[in-house]
Each structure stands twice: as structure tokens, then as C-alpha cells.
Length: 134
Length: 500
Image 1 (cartoon, rainbow over the protein chains, first blue to last red):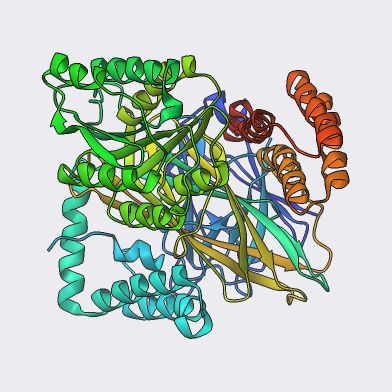
Image 2: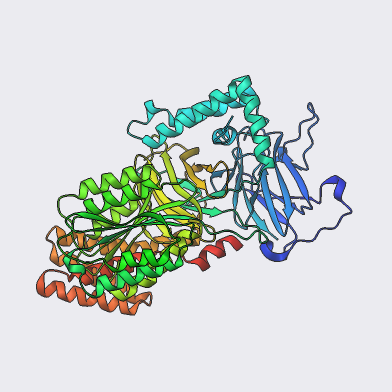
């Protein structure tokens, strides 16, 4: 099992944004655990992070690249979703992906942010991940 | 162009979707909702019409331009919304050689209101339909009159009230009128008298007629029916009236006063008409009930709320039960569950039970598509809807996944209500011993959970049943409505879920 750490959206590295403790209880990181591979991603989201799969030909480089986790086979779009930190909560938004983003089995409508909670199951296309705060 | 719903969200696609995306989304949904694969599934048929409408308008270049312009205008407006959150009891389902159940907890929340904007009370077009039969004579009628007069005090001059009394026939005590001359209204109430039998159809018909005279989509159009007796031979016609009334935007709540009325019939009537049913054992509680009922009506955020439930072709819906604000069995009317009102500060939550087919292949599969529709009082246009599409993973050896606390809690409480229901059922079938056994078991379970008073009542009824082979009318209703009240979604557990 290996963990990738992604610190921030590239243009925001120097800006320090702290969480409100309301929802994530003083945790500083968001962990994505992938069921299939047992791999994890540790994120420290600050303001906004795009999620998708890196594609050199179209020059798409998302902040969180899911390509190493089987994104292509599992139908993750190049620009699939976005994470935003707002008022101490982390919001997940589907940004018009082809195969959808599912939060605990409920399909997210594009561009309608939803709050992420500890233990949530998030599915990008057919790529299943579980969320925990650390 | 007046755009009722956002066709993009109907198809679950984003506003910058290409023509190919639109076609793809439509085909995907049409495979599940097409009438050919869904015989006898009216919700699917209706939702199919919706997606076809959305597809047609978005694939027409002129239509699409108009839609985009309208959506942009709406975005700049002040319209608010409600949300629908659906949580499944399992996120991964095991492959099984037999059919299996899954539960969905559906919660409707009004959008958070801005603090600085003081919400105005929702205007009412309220009709009281009051049983004036002989049995109402005395303290019952007196308390109802006091309750009605207090209710008149609580109304604003912009509210509309009508009152219909009924026994074997109906009489309009107060034609639908603005509540601006309160002494006059109260005087009308004070001359109500009781005599004769109970024929609910007459009263309901006249009540609906009065309510319709002043029907106003900007108001809560509501009928409150109070009775203390059985109605004979007109139940089917009453249910039909209720269905029609609700289709036209009028909701009906019922109160059974005392213990000599038909609870099954009145529960069903209220469920069909998007209202609540309540058991009031003694007349002195009527005043408080009216008060609370009117308060909740004036706090309505969204009215004429229905949930359209379209299970996938191989899935069926088995049960729908409202957990809060007032627990009760729900009815599917043409694939739609009438829900009545959504209050600004109290969410509506319900538990849906679905049966999934045997031998599902591994992979991801959709289960059902839910659409909540309602009129938001402060919006212009009022009509609003939100779609929730449920899709789960089927696997050979799924991760052990505890159902969410709120669903576990609701199910264990619902078990008590159902145990009571089963006891009644066994009793009706003549199986007194089995009914007694179930009641004794229920008493034990109630005691375990700390409901000692109700446990005692249940035990008393069980021994009554042994002796006389029947329940007391009062005991039967107390058991039913008290176990029903227990099902209310625990707010602490619900908010825990929010915090997590």
C-alpha cells in the first residue's frame, strides 16, 4: 500500500487556510481509500482542488490525478469533479463527468456541491473510494 | 418561455453538456423508465415523459437557447430550493441466490433561510369539517367549539376559514371567508349543535367544495376533518374524494376523537391526501392539537409535495413509512407518495423498502429514481423538483458495512409498530392465541426500551384478550398510535449523521 500526498492547488501553496473544526474535528487531511487496490491518497485541500485523470494529449492536469488508481478502466473523466473547502466543511462537486459521481449511492447532479462526511463512499464512475478525515 | 424545471437536472447532466452527452444520458434513463419495460409502474411512466420532454427541448437548438437564457435569468433571481438526501441501508449488496431487501432513508430539507430575512407566515385556506353527530354532544362539542374559536384568534385577516358540520347530512356553518371579522366568525361557531348519525362522505364533499371556492396556489389549502364515529358504506367514495382533492392541491388531515372510529380508514384517507392522522383520546386535548396544527401549517415552506418513486424494472417498492415530522404509513397513489407540506424548520424523512431480484450480476447497478416535487411558497414560479438517482455496487463478498445509525434506529422502532399490526392482523383472522403471544412479546420489547407505561397497557390488553377474546377499543388505538409515535426519527441521531 502506498500513499500519495498532495498538498494544495499549485497556485495556493503559500496561503494558509485552516479548517473550522465543525465537521472534520480538527483533522487536517482528507484520505481517499480505494477499495480495489488498497491504495490511498492523502489530501490537504486548501480552497479548491480539481479531480480527474491526467491526459497529456489534451493537456489536462487535474490537482488530484486518479490515473494511477485505475481511472481509465473505471470511467473517470478527465475533468470529473472538484473539492472545495468552505466554512469548515469539504464540499464535493461533480463537474459534468460522463459516468457520474455517486455519494453513498446517490448520483450527484453536476455542479451541485455536497458536503463530505467521514465514512462516506464516493464513486467516480466505477472507481470506489471511502473518505476519512485524519 | 416559462420553464418549470431545469431539463439538464432532469437528465442529470451539466449545462455545458454536448449533444452527444444529452443523447447518452437520455438513452441510459430511457432503458430504465420506458413504459415497455415497466408495465404497471406509473411513476416510471411519468418520469419517462419528463426525461423525454427534457431530451426534446435540449436537442432542439431553439429550445436549448431559450432554456439556457431562462436558467441564467433564474440564477440571478431570488428563488430558493429544497434538497433531497437519500441514504441506502447498504452501499454494497451481496450476490444472493434469493431476493433481498434494501432500505432507503429519504430526507427532504428546506434550504437554510437567511437570518436577516424574516419569514412571513404562510397564508392558509383552511376548512374545518366537524362531526356533529349525536355522540359529539356535551364536552366533545364544547371543546371543539373552544378549539375552533382559539383557532380563529390565531388566524390573520389574510387567512381564509370555512367550517362545515356534518351528521347524516352536511351544513355549511361558515362559508369560506377571510378571517377579518373574528367576533362574527366565533358567533357562527357557537351555535353549532349535535344530533343524528355520522356520514363522513357528506361532510367531506361539502368541505372540499368550500375549500375549492377559495383555492389559491399561494396558500396552504387544507382540510381538517374531525370525527368521533364510524361511517358506513361510503368509505370507498371518501377515499376517491380525497384522491381527487389531493390531485387538485388540497390536503386533508384527520382527527379521531375518542375510541369509536375506524382507524384504518382514516389513516388511509390522510395518507392519500397528504395529511396527518391523529388519535385524541379525550376532548380536553383538542384545543392544544388545533393550535399546534395551525402553527405547523403557517410554517410551511413547500406545499403540495409528492415523491415519485420509480424502481428499476426488476426492483419493486414494498413499503413507505414517514418517520418525521409525524410518523405514519404512506400510500403510493399512481406511483407517487403524497407528502403534503415541508415546513421551514422541520425536515420530512421517510423510509422506503425495496425488494431486489435474486442472482444479481456483480458490478454497479441502478436501483430506483426518486423525484421530489412541490410548490415553494415564496418562489415565482413556485413549482420545484429535485431528482435522486440511486446506484449501488453488487459484489460477491462485500465489505461488512453497518447500516447508518438512523436507519438501524428507525427499523428497530418500526418493528414494534409492525408487531402491533401483526397482532391485530392475527386477531382479525381469529388467531387469538397468536395475537396474545405477539402482544406479550411486544410488551417485553417495550419494557426493554424503557417505555414502561406503554408496556403495561400492552400487557393489560394481552390479558384482556385472553379473557374476552377481544381488545378494548381504547387499548387497540392506544397501542397503535403510541407505537407509531415511537417511530419518529430521533433528532439526535439525525443530527449525529449530519455532524459525521
